[in-house]
Image (cartoon, rainbow, N blue to C red; front, side):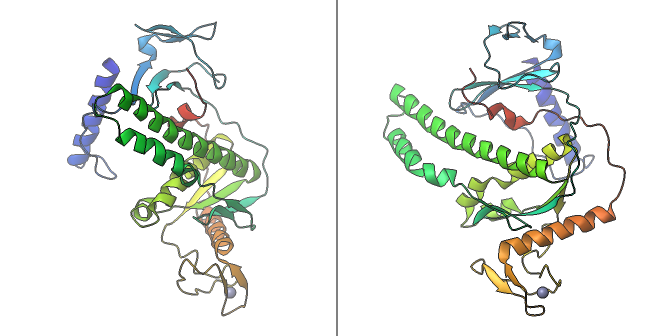
Amino acid sequence: MQQALADLNAAYRNFFASATGRRKGPKIAPPRFRSRKDRRQAIRFTANARFRVLENGKLRLPKIGDVQVRWSRELPAVPTSVTVIRDGAGRFFASFVVQVSAQPLPETDAECGIDLGLGHFAVMDDGTKIAAPRFLRRAEKKLKRVQRDLSRKQKGSNRRDKARAKVARAHAHVADARRDFHHKVSTRIIRENQAVTAEDLAVKGLARTRLAKSVHDAGWSAFTAMLEYKAKLYGREFRKTGRFEPTSQVCSACGVRDGPKPLSVRQWTCKKCGTVHDRDVNAAKNIAALGRREAQNARGGQVRPLVTAAQADEAGSHRGAA
Ligand SMILES: [Zn+2]
């Protein structure tokens, strides 16, 4: 309860600072009440609250007691806080905040640019294409069924509650699979490259179009966030290119701007130099070039010992923690 009050205090501070112009960045909305219907619940304990990880692997929580934990990994350091979460599917997670120092990997010369798309999940400037696993689309049948079951149950009934849990579990399954995929791809890319450049996508704008379902399904922003923190952790460089760069219009061989092309054009020939381009690979090449240019502009000592807080999403990276 104390932590909830502290969080509320911080939220109001941020809101007023934003409203009076003392805080930079986008306007911050006032705190909202939590939905009574929201099944996700979380409670955070800081070091002051005296939570403890016991020798026998249990987690001691004030006023709750010793809780059995199925650890997804060993804690790299003594945690400063723990958040216990019950998600919509009724699963419990303990998410720790830990200080980690950077674990730089041996340097390589490889660099890469990534074009994120809908046809393929990602296309690299060397021509590698990573297919998009359409988790949501594939799970749609099942989701449809459980959602229909839910809608037929009487409001307030026990059966409705059970059906609701089934829907939540189906969604959680999709989210888990997607996160797992993102982790695998991002780790591989960061391991293999010294510098990685990706587009800073206007996901919000795209998500309001007809492509919305596919855009959300791809989960680009979660993916680039992983690239970013993994780059820091492993001593790599992650760059974002501006979102208004015409990466799919410019010839990566001679630099001539060929004009906009509808999404249906997958391949084109440069009018000036005659190079035949795969649309996505060409875009990835341009992104890589932009990243190199940006790096030349901003050569500065950015190497500092790194403190990375545990990622918020890691709570879900293991299944069935009870
Ligand atoms: Zn050309």
